[in-house]
Length: 141
Image: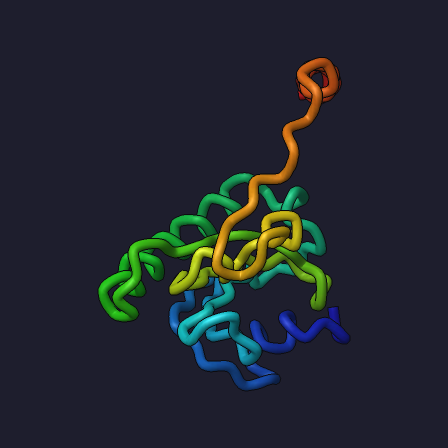
């Protein structure tokens, strides 16, 4: 896509602080990081949604993210590295790889009920609702 920021980065038309590159994926630093070292791993081929990635490509992205995470742990002196897909700001599938210095570095508002220094567990769903949701999902898998 000609108007996709990540496609432009993958093509070399927009500069990035590259960490890794092969013929299928590119990893680079996020310029708006949650924490220093926050990296993005993208497929070079344009895919809007992560669930539309061909399985081998999704695996390649995860493998790249794991390699980056293994380097991040000792470098940033953290116990945990988060990896997740969002796609909120750029409509091109991308994985975030974030060194976690704080339990809420990549948390949602649902876990912040008691403030930043604690970790609130959201209310548990009714077991019947959970069973119904699981059955609906299973039936489509």
